[in-house]
Image (cartoon, rainbow, N blue to C red; front, side):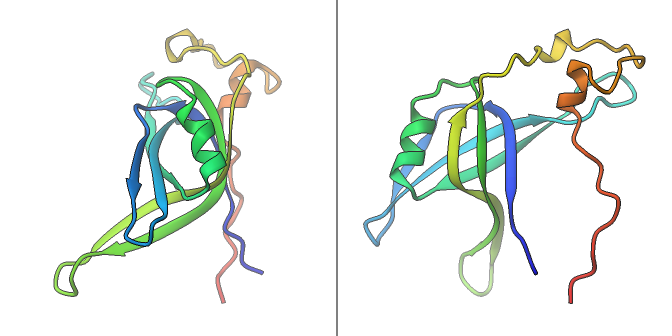
Length: 139
């Protein structure tokens, strides 16, 4: 069975944008910044992931947050195609079905120690994504 589930915890990157669609619906857009595992040179790398929602309650929650506030979002990965047939533009985003402020005590990126001896139960372990052993072939 196919599954398309996304769970992200990160920081709101900036102001939330709202756009009215020709159908009368409102789409709310924002970006969430998610840190990657520390690079071997010591630099903290991040991904800025575009998120959208058509749900007014989810939009209200995200609008209530300030830039750099932590939030948790759940939804589905989407690929949208825009433009005329001669010049298609492909965009990837997370269509969010639920969002909530994230209240955990996460350290600032500069405050994460470079100590490789941290135990798996340490605070750094919560920031490191789980590794996927394999990807099942699609059929």
